[in-house]
Length: 295
Image (cartoon, rainbow, N blue to C red; front, side, top):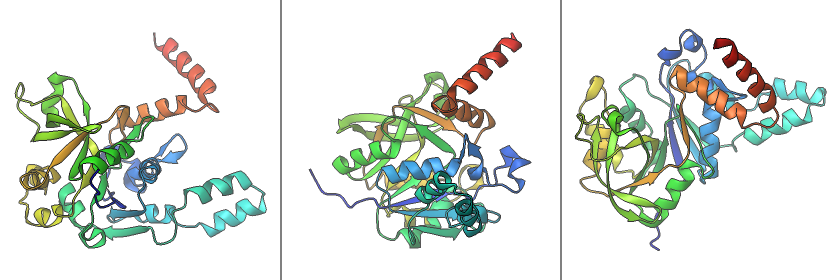
């Protein structure tokens, strides 16, 4: 098996305004909204840690300082918990705290799109391959999504994107990939099409928010013209990079919750609550009662 440079860093773009969740996100970043009892951002960080990520690069914007505070020690809170002998809570907070020096925060001063947000991390990532994780997408599976992608990367190298199936009739709403020969637990991507015209999609596999990218994407994004929405689009940069480097797909086998939408956020709370033995009975009974009352 060929040796490929290890993926140690992950970029998390968290500069978005979260307008779909106003007024809640007027003062609380959408990434800090709780799914059951953890903020959305914690789920994606946990996924990355399980995949072996050692350093997190958060691309933030104004009014996102609370994210930085969340990944720091809270002396007053911990002192109060210690005085009250809340050892379980103290242990939980300690387990979630990143090691010193493993989190870096940089600003995207203006909202110029996902491609621009990724480009803002270039000096921190340097000349290494990196993972890109869209924090809106909370994924639940026996094998964490990024871990499965790492397995493909170890075999194939290059660039890896996670995909999952959609209804073929809905393929025109997504970024779709063409499926080539199998490579390990993944496959070679033959093409990438952003929102193809109905009936023209090369498959029904859509890109779902997880990427492993080579650093050559940075100079490309620095020169990429504004595309859809007058923003610098990551897809445009990847299409250019695909002319020079191979792209591979990982078929994610699990559930993806789009917590950037109200519906996805609510479903994530319900689904993940039902997986918790400590609260499932109460939640399940209340849901059944609510559904029965609506009939």
